[in-house]
Structures are given as structure tokens and as C-alpha cells.
Image (cartoon, rainbow over all chains, first blue to last red):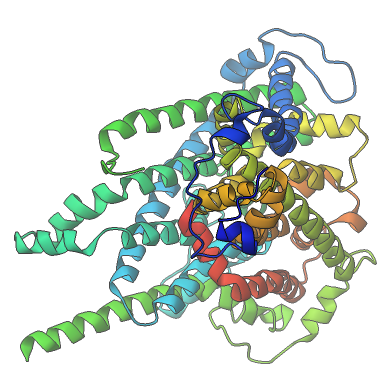
Length: 327
Length: 281
């Protein structure tokens, strides 16, 4: 390397904001080793932890579970190949599989939109307020940061229990309580409520998105006589669609994978009305040691999630708005 | 005049709605904290009130004793051990990987970036069974290895977050350093690492949260009570074969959230920025 004496950066050895960018493009000396300026060895060295982890903890397990799904492996013996036996049993002979699928779809398809719509509504409200916005944001975000904690799931059970806080509050107002967790018709909704309660991080993402919308769009719109609703539909919503897409994909996956709430709050009951898919898979794997069957279940869910994600991405071409000058 | 009043009324109603919302959202939490000071037998009798009729801080002492001679000191110690090692491992490895993907030019970079994004979307539950069998074969059940080790290979969310951050650092800085004779490694250590510390902090905070509240991992891999982290230990309170001491249960639940609250209130700024820039959950 040839330090250029005329370069103030080279002389002082300090890089400040004011240091001029080197005028010479890094052409010659660095590319001598490699025609295209590639640094293959260095690059792979830096990402080597990921590659190792990817192969050992993602790729291999996925392939291995595909293999297991065609066996009757029970963790102790050797896996015997049983062909499509697991899948056949799942689709034709296992009522619980279908129940868990139905419960999971009901849960995810109500809880995810609920959370997103609520998060957007609150974000828009917060976006209009100037005073105390930091404090409000913090307090509204709080449930989201602790919501995944087991303490909250335990608390939820007591809130909605027969003599829990909700019934007690209702009784205070003279309304007779309800066995929220004991009634198969309402048990799942307590879990949906728990999911919706943790709307904070989606709210923050939406809030950041709202802040990025230039104010003059709204000014121009109101000069043209657009009302609040048409401003929302024509400006806010389209410009937020990229953010909504990202949220929708991640939240949908998260919704389908929900486990802790049903495991702790309702234990899948009453009458399997909250038997979420992952809970059932967990029981198959770690209570019955039915590893082959559980692996087949994991693969079925993987395909379902893959299809759903593909649908969301495919459809996004029609509803996600990308600004032309976007990087 | 009319317009001014209307504006005030609008402003007032906005604040009013937000405050009502906050009260509803935080009610369960306040109720839990209140219940942790109530007399065990009265928690559900006076469930409608937040403030206990008489204060019983001894719930905390009762709860701290834990189960079968294992106190919550052990559970907290276990949790802190797992969380600290996990966090250090995930941040160091993720920063390396993020730099490689964001700044170094190498063949196959696009492919590995795509793999990283796919891994980010792949839920842990989908690989949980084969991973369990693997760790079982390595005889690592009832150790912390299965909980800690995977984090040393980078966490896709954090890689993505730090990458986003590295991209905002002007490339001229790297080039100037190259002129000065820095190689890729010294650019990484001397320029990139000091500048991405905010992003690393954000990632560290999330790592702390996730690992602190992780339930499924320890549930599968740890079956010895003396190795339980707080999350699994709390579940013992609500197990049917334990005669539940409600006051103690709420006390320990509240206590388990204290580290989360502390981190949240100290490092709020990083969290808000982190979520806003990367869309982290």
C-alpha cells in the first residue's frame, strides 16, 4: 500500500466527518490480486459461523426430519421405514390433527389481523398527538415486551378464570360472569386477546412508517378537498403497504407457531378447543415420543406456511405500493 | 373562537382515548403486581380491586423458597447464566456475519444472504424435533448446550438488523482506511465495530428478552429442576400436582419481570430505534 502524502486522512490518521473522501477511486492496487475485486476468502471467513450453523442446525435438521417423517422413530429404537404411513394416519385416521389445524387457522386468521389493525389504529392516533408521545409509546409498548413471558400466560389464566379479575369486574357492574376458559366457545378467544394485547412492536413499526410519509402529501390532498377518510385510503394506506407486508408475513408465521399460550393458559382444552397445532405436535413428540409422526406434522405445517407466505408475496404485487425512487 | 375550542376539544379527546387505552392495556399487569401483595386466600375474593386490603410482602419470601428445596435464587442464577452467554455469543457472531454480508465482496454472497433471510422466516418449531434428536445423540440433554450453542452461529434477525445499520455507514470510510493500509479485518475492528455499537446494543437487548422469556427450549431440553431457568420454574406453580400458593405465584411472576422492566426502561431508546429500522418483532 502506498500512503499518499497529500492525503490529510493518511497524514493525521484520523477519519472525521470533514475528511474529504479519497479522490482516487480504489482501482489499481487493490485489484491486483483479484480481477473483479472479490475477496472470497475474507468473505467466507466472516460468514463462516452462519454457514456452519445453517448446515448443522437448519439444513440437516430439515432434511433429517423429512426422512424421519417416513419412519416410526420413537427415540429409543431404530427408525423403521413405514412409507407414507404417518401421512396416511394423519389425514385419514387422526381426528385431533384436523381439530388442531382448524383451531390454528381460526386463531391465526383472527389474531393476526386483529393485532395489525389495532396496532395501525393506535399508531395513527399516536401520530396525531404531540405532547407525551414518548411516554404513551413506552406504556403501550410495554405489554409487547413482557407478553411472551411465561408470567403473563399464568396471569392470563387467572384473569379469565371463573373467579378471576374479569368476572369479578363484571360482577362489580352487576353483570354475571362467564366461564371464559371452561367454555369451548370462548376459550380460544382469550388466547386471541392475549395475542392482540401484544400489539406494541407492530405499532412501533407502523409509527415509524407513518413518520416517513411526507407531510406535504396531506397538505396537497386537503387543498384538493380530500377528507380524512380518503386521505387515509389514498395516501396513508398505500404508503404503508410495504411495512404492512413485512408485518403480515412475520406475524402470520408467528401466529401459526403459537405454543406457550395454549400450553400454559388452557392446556389445549376444554375439549381440544384450543389445541394449537404446535401444542399437538409437541405432545406427539415429547409426550408420546412419536418422533416420526411429529416430524411429518412439522413438514405439513412447513408446506402450509410456505404456501401462505407465497400467497402473501404473490398477491403483494397487486396491493403493495413501491415508490419509484425507492432504493 | 369556535375553531379554537373545537381544536382543544379534539386534542383533549385524543389524549383521553390514549389514556383510557393505556389503562386498559396495563390493567392486567397492575392487577398482577397488586395480587402479589394480597393475602393468598383473598386474591380471588377481592379480585376486582387492584390495591390489596392488607399488604403481604411475605408472599415474596414464601415464593422465593421455590420447590423441593430449590429456591428461586437457583432459577434466577440459571436464567442469568443462559441469557448472558447466549447474548454474548449471538452478538459477536452476528456482527461478524453482518459485516461479511454487507461489506465484503465475494462470490455467492447473494445466495448466502437469501439463505439467511429464509432462516429468519423458518420457525424454530419446524426444526425442533430433529434438533432435539441431534442433541440427544450428543448426550446434551439436561445441559445448557442446546440452548446456548445455536446462538454462536449468528441469529438471522440480528444479522439483518446490524446489516441495515452497516449500510448507513459511508463506504468512503472503508475506502479511506484501505488507502491507509487497513485490511478487511482491521477495517472491521477499527471502523465498523465502533460505529455499529448502537445496533449491537439493540440486538443484545432483544437477545436478552428472547432468551429470558424462552420457554419451549428449556421445556424440551431441561428436565432437572435444579437446572430450570425462571420461565420453566414459574410453570411449576400452576402444575396440578402442586398445591398452588397464589400469592407466591404472583410474587415470583412479578419478580421474573423485574429484569425485563429494568432493561426496558434503561435502554428504551435502542429498542424503539431497533424496531423502527428493522421491523424486528
